[in-house]
Structure formats: C-alpha cells, structure tokens
Image (cartoon, rainbow, N blue to C red):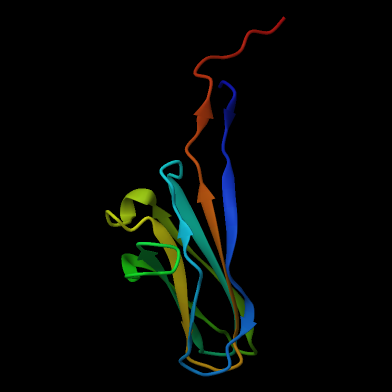
Length: 139
C-alpha cells in the first residue's frame, strides 16, 4: 500500500454560543482553502427544543474578512429538535472545486428560529493523499 498519509487541519468557526434572538444568524470567521486542500467538512452542532430548527449554509468569500460572501449552492444542512430538547449534529461536505473562481475562503452561517439555542461550527480541511507509490523495501 505504500507509505500514505492523510493530513488535516481543523478550525473552530463558531465558538459554542447561546443565540439570544430568534431568527438571528451567527456568522463565522473565513478560512483560506489553499490549493493543497482537496476537500472539507463543516460540522455543526445545536441544542434545539422540539420542532425548532438551525439552518447552516456554507459561504465562500474573496478574503478572510468575508468580502463578497455568498452561499455555495447546495451546501446547507437543517437540524431539527426533537421532543424534550435534543443535541443535533449535521455535516456539510464540500470539495475545493465547489468554490467559485476567486473565492478561496470559506465560512458558515447558522440561523435558528428560537432564542436560547446553543450552536457551534467546526471546519475540517483535508489534504490530498501523498506518499510513496511503491512498497518500501524491508530487511
């Protein structure tokens, strides 16, 4: 199989926080997805009461300040609370090729329909596999 290694890097996009106002949107910092990264995942978690929702959407931007930020088509996840309150987790997967030319930064927005929701978002970037093409010799 060769000596292959998969390296990744993770970023806390939205620190764990309480959403104070229903309908509020939490916006993350924006992280550069350099050419060495082939794919990524945004992991979103929320504590929601029955039937309440949190909608997370992957955003792309032209710089780390979020300039010209826009949603990446088809890259959303909706979390829905269950009776008695529940902790929900959702994942948005993307490839570098999903981003528009000139938009090398990603972030996420999370919008909830209830105040008091606790939310958090983490970005995991995965590098392409690198390594030897042949088995190393053993003695």
